[in-house]
Structure formats: C-alpha cells, structure tokens
Length: 337
Image 1 (cartoon, rainbow, N blue to C red):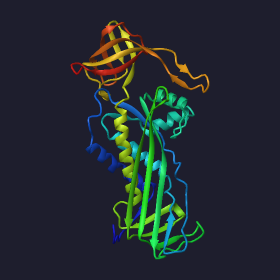
Image 2 (cartoon, rainbow, N blue to C red):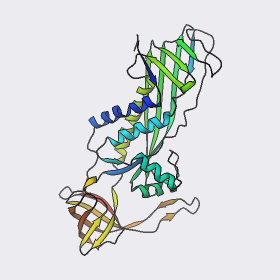
Image 3 (cartoon, rainbow, N blue to C red):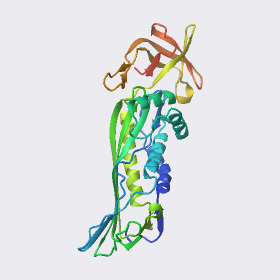
Image 4 (cartoon, rainbow, N blue to C red):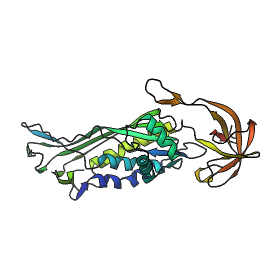
C-alpha cells in the first residue's frame, strides 16, 4: 500500500460499514449447510477483554512503536459485522437486535459474551431460538511504527500525535461460542483471526474521538483484519451449527392432526419428518444450581401433510399421539433416508 495519498477515517462506524461486504462475501461462498427448517439464532454482544487502551513507545534507538487504542464502540461494531454475516446465510433466521435487547431488558438478562447458562436458557426460550452466539475479542493489536526516529512520541495521552511513519499493523482475534438455547450449555467453540499491514503511510492520532486517519487506503489495516477475523469465525461457526438439530413444539392436537409451531416461513415443507419427544423434568446441578438439561423420551414420528406460513400439520407415522408442548425434532425429508 505504498504511496497512499487520500484520507479515510477508522471508527466504529467504518467497521459497521464493512458489514455489508462481509455478508456479501459469505453469501457468495455458501455451501449446503443443512436441509430442513431454518435455525433461529441470536447474536449476543461481543465482550472486549483485549481492548485495553495503550499508548506505549520504545524510546531511543533507530525505531519507535506506538500501540494505538481501538476506535470507540469497536466491540459493538464487530457484533454488527458478525450479525450481518450470519443473517446472510439462508439456513438461519437471526433474531432482530431490537427484539433481543427488549426481551433481555424486560427479563433483566445480560446480552454480553459472558452470559450465564441460566440466563441464556431463559433468553433462548423467550426468543424461540435454538442457539445463541456469544464471544470475546481476545486479541487486539494496532501499532504504528517508524524507522530512523521519524515519529515524535508525546508523553501525555491527552496530546496529539502526528508523524510520518513506515508501517501500520493490526491484528484481531475472536473466540466465539455456540450456546444451546434450551440448557445454556456450550455446544462448541471456534476462533477467527485476522491481520493486515500497511507500509509507507502517514497517520495522525488524536485522543478526541480516538480516530486514526490513514492516507489513501480503500480499507484500513484495522478494518481488513476485523473483516478477516469475522469471515473465518463465521465459516467455523457454520460448520459447527450443522450439529445443532432444529427443534420445535407441538402447538395443538385435533383429532388425528398434529400442529407444530413452525411453517413455511422458516422452510417447513410437506413430506418432512419429525421425531416426537416427551420432555421430562429438568436436571439441576445441586452445587451450582445450573440447569443441566432435560431428559426426553421418543414417543413417535410425524410426517408433515399441510403447511401454512406460521404452522404445519402432520399425521402420526408411528408411536402414540403427542400432547401439546411435546418436542419435535427434524429428522429428514421423505425419501431422503
């Protein structure tokens, strides 16, 4: 990126603008994730363990390095990028952020990457979600460096730093987790990493607004590193979400017809087959009080015969007639097994 001439601003808003690019990239490279109903997921706020603001230098010698703090609302910007990327996958229905925040506030539940299992299960049930995505920014490095003492380091962090420099380097890493929205247990963990470097650039750092001006790049190193971390993280999440079965409930039973709480708007079609389960009482850890799960017993199999946008109707193929609120889990389409 040598010889850069124009100027752009890196901020949380710039990161948010990259969301569309990330989503488009994922949509273009979609693989056959799963068949059956679309999985409903919620994306929680990413925590920012690694986002400690630093202003450091290596005085003397022939080179100087300064560690730059992240832009304001950096974690929120990455959360938006992650949400947009997952929403671009046709296999998922991503819960609207306003709905997630509203329910969490009403129930006084946290929505951060450190959400407790009990809170996750409560939130998942209220959202009708099968899985929640949480995570943490575990690595963050943004450095500007100069050879030959070209950079003037000011001791006060309240001062402005303006310099000609040779290199700007960024590295971002995310640890993401898939949470079972029924039990709150961690199903799987994945990691996404990204890095980028620009050379021969000029930069100006000001404490006000924590903005970093870069000469002429179409995307800054921090933006490029963030996008790469999100893309790798989403790719790994998609593979792991293959293991999460779609699950719903029996909404009603009328004569020989069984109604389930999912329809054509999430991909239910005639001929789909579901296993029916009777759910037992929850098992609670006597030490922590956390819900460990609920044992269930398979009671029958259901084949869908009619589909409406919000519900579907099936007839019992084997087993005993279910009751309202029994579990149904997708097992395949007729003729595919």
